[in-house]
Every structure is written in structure tokens, then in C-alpha cells.
Length: 236
View 1 (cartoon, rainbow, N blue to C red):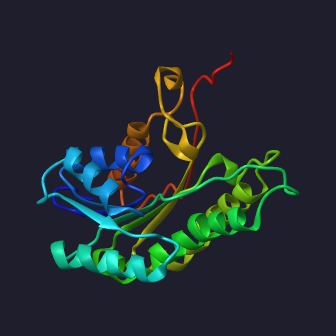
View 2: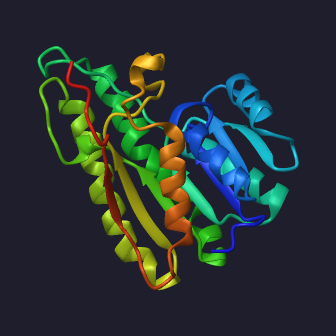
């Protein structure tokens, strides 16, 4: 894919992984729309990223299909095309299953799992026209289960399965589909505040480099499921 002036839409793009990917795509010459649940936070991120001609801020809750339809329509109205969609928005609540609340369960399902469906449904026709790329941000929690993670594991296992099946559905349209499954990332996930102590972790811009590598892959080749982890975990 020739990246100059191509258009990307990133959900959950105001900070963390989404923001790091946006930085890398912009540096490669792309135009980028980022979304989040609050317009103020997304606007602040967009201002840091660059000018209005190349960056677009959108308020959208991925758990609401109408929000995603509106967001994608606004991207198309502004730039006329959509070449890459990164379904990155996610939440996590961790507790033993007997203590996990129904509200926390449903928020994770609605955001992490239904959200990637809503984002794809909103963008799939545009991706058919561009022969574009749809990428979901899953997690190593989508293949490794752990205590207190039943709800989160359920969503990420679901995202991995969903994405792999979608890949089979959409490749006849020359749409590429991949899922990225990171381990520990120095992000703001679950109210974490990144610091120097997180230097051993994957950095958001590292995921951005990985997305660029996928975009530059020859059209005949598709890395459909990518696990990525810190080279040397923190052992303290």
C-alpha cells in the first residue's frame, strides 16, 4: 500500500496504543481520524498530533452502532475514502467471577467485542471500495487465560475468533484483516499512568511500527494473527 494521503480511522485514539499508531501513520504521510467517547479528550490529542488537514477528532462510543456509522460517514465526507480501520477501543475489569458485576461484564462485552463488530459494519463498504485493511487490537489475553480475567478473557478470545473468521469472509474483496495480540504495553489501559518503570514494556509506538509493517506487506501475503510481547519481561 502506498501510504501517502491514505486515510485511517482509529477507535480509542486519544491516548495509549491508538495514539501511538496515529503518530506513526501520520509520519508515514497518511491522514488519520481518531475517536473516543469524549470529544474534548480526542480534540486535545488531535491538536498534539497535527493540523486539521491531516487529523480529525471524532466522538464515538463503539458500543453504539449509530455512533460508529456517524463517525465513518464523517471521515468519508471529509476525505472521500477509508483505507485502514484499527479497532482499538477497549476496557478491562478484573475480579473473581463470583465478584465480577453484571455491569462490568456487559461494558467489556459491549466495548471490546460488540465494538469491533460495530466498527467493521460501519466501515466495510468503504473498505471494499479501497481494498483496504481492517485490524483489531486483541491481546495475549485472547489466547492465555488467567485468574480474575474471565470477563476480559472472554472478550479477547472472542475478538481473536471474530477477526479470523472475518478475514475469511472479506479476503474475496481483497480486504486484508489481521488481529494484533500484545502483551504488556506501556499504555493508559485500566487507568494506568505510564512512567519510567514501564520502560521494559512494549511502547505504543512499537505497535505503530507493527501496523506500518503490515500495511507495507506485499498484497499476496497476510500475517493474520500477530502475537507480540516484551523481549525481556520485568522480573522484579
